[in-house]
Structure formats: C-alpha cells, structure tokens
Image (cartoon, rainbow, N blue to C red; front, side, top):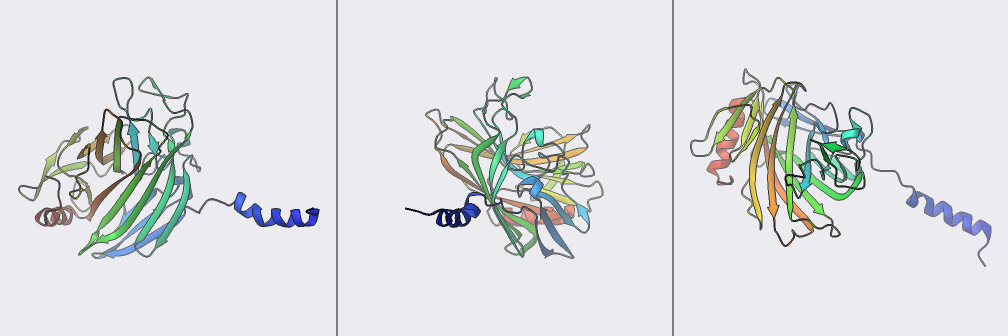
Length: 308
C-alpha cells in the first residue's frame, strides 16, 4: 500500500514535468557584417519568430502585428473557394493576436548562441474557425495547428558575412489529407522606407527596377530605400524536390498599412495526396547597401547556386 507521504512526494517530482513552462522566446544573436553588426531579436510575443533585424542602426522588420515579421507560414488546398488564409499555419501567431503581447503559436524549443538561432514552433492557424478571409470561412477547427516549423538561422554564409543562411522545415501531420501545399518558406515585412523594388537577373548578374506589384516572378527580388543605403533580398539556392514548383518570389507594397513585403514560395501538388512529414527549404538573405546585395546575388549565381 502506498502511503500519503509517498504519493505527495511522487507528485512533487512529477509536477514540474506536467506543468513545465514553455521556453522563453526572448533571445538575440549578432555578428559582425561588414562595418556594422547584424543583430537579430526574437520575443516570447512571437513564439520565437524574428521581430527585429538591424544593421547600421536601420530596422529592417515591421512588427506591428503577428503577421509582420521575418517568418514562415504554409497554406493548403488553395482553390476558388479556399484562399491562402483559410487553412494557414503561421509561425508568429494568429490574426486575432493582433498587436497584443501574446501569441497563439506555441514555442517548443529555442537556442540562441553567437551568430546562430534555432527554434521549433507549433504554429497557430491564422484564422479562428469562425473567422473569414475574403468572405471565405476558415477550414481549421482548432486555433493551434499540429503543424510544426523548425528553423536554423546563421548570420553569415560561407565568405559572405552580410547574408543570412536560413533553413526551414515544415512538418505536415500524418492525420491530415491534402492535395496541395503552399510553403511560404520565408517572408519579410519591412518598414515603408523600403519602397524601391528590384528584380535580380541571373543572365546579367544585375538588378533591374521592378514595380511594387503585387505579383510573383521567377527571379529573386530586393527591396531597398530610395537612396540605396539599405537593402534586403531573398535568394533560393537550387533545391529540386518531387512534386514541387518553385521557388517563386512575391512582392507587395501596402500603402494603407505602411509596410512592404517580399516572400519566397514553393508549391507541392499531388492529386493522390501529398505526403506527410518534413519539407525542408534553404534560403539566403543578403543584407547591406543595394550594391552589396547585388554583389552577393551575382556571386551566388556565378557559383551555380540559383534555380534557373
């Protein structure tokens, strides 16, 4: 027979395991990048998503709500009756989280050491089950999804200290059936001063002016300040995968919201059903002056890393 004091002792041992707090999402990494540091900051509010990136004192991220970060998201089974938000696991949190101090996403693990950040996040659905986007009702029934995002980010890539070496893995649960997945492998929402857009042409190794869109193109995009002193782009190394189209690169400028955006998207389709499990993508994010960003992209193209 187990006595009451023994039971009480067992409960004291087990309780920390049952009620363990989530990891603290407040973290920072930094590294020298040219004549300034790149500093990346995450917060508990965003479940480890990146809410700040600075270089030379310039903020590159607009963090007004839980959609406007440097982060990743996915969407499934898009159709005329299902847009990208009606089943939309999102790293930083939900639409309803808004400008608040909490997130519906759940941070599972975080490590920030030197120039390297690693996180694992159970993503929230962007919409609650009763909410609509573009008049279309959300297809998820829970607020917290079973989709997990793992990321590994380093400041510096090989001989380029002003680039982010960014790896993401989307884990699609086995108990869901989908014929299409849209992986927004990475997106950045940037302050409105980044209002000058460029397209990188691998054939010439040069940037050319690009409209503010919105729209997707096959070539990498760069957003810069009008004087060219600050710029950030997105570039996907070659990574062919089964049933996959991409990368494609999108860009937007939202006048009313005072925010600019780029993204890099991969789409997976299989009418017999896409597989469950992990989908991994590698991104490079050049940061610096417009000339420096162009030079990095040209170097990477010459090295044969770009998807043609």
